[in-house]
Image 1: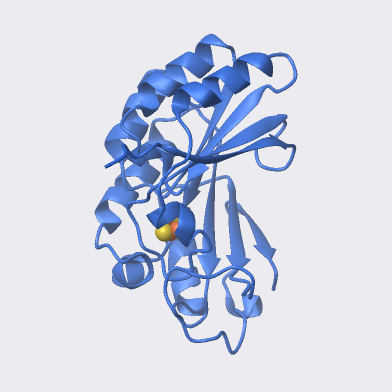
Image 2: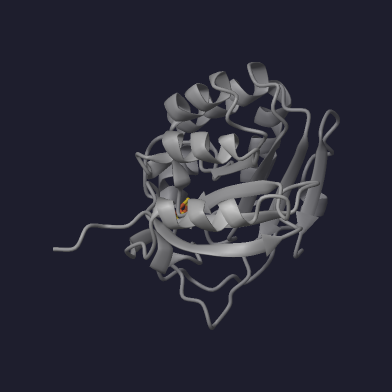
Length: 232
Ligand code: SF4
């Protein structure tokens, strides 16, 4: 049996995914969640096609042309070789953005302590009572620990974001998340994006079609952080 490879693919250039950086995106295969609306089932369940060494070779040649690397997926933190991979990227002076679902606070804590991270995008999937329904796993406490780490210990800029499929979540759920963010306290930007069906891209599970989008007028006004609503 062939050994599973960690890298699904690389997007060689983006100016949209890492604030104030010209970056590439490394898509890691595998994920520790099973969100029904996931548009990347081939990444979550599929085998990787490349090695970390191949990506490092590519990025050696891009020094001076790119200044950041986005670690995305799937979920990058499931790759056991991630610390060494980041160490190598740091030795090439790349800034690192980690996209994460927050299930590995131990890893995020180590990375923060080691100065590995320059930006974090954290998915707040659902409030505690809906967390398992949305993600397939009952680990809100782990996510919550990661959010607390970033709010209280990190000097690293980070953003929080939620994707809403209205067959799974409604205005009460987003209101609950906003109250929680306010209380932590979170003081950045909270991005809420509506799930957009794309007939060319399968989802991880069959979900009922959305019959409506979230009514953002029914959400509370955030007083202490910014909100950004997309595709509503
Ligand atoms: S949407 Fe969910 S299942 Fe898909 S990659 Fe993100 S965390 Fe994993």
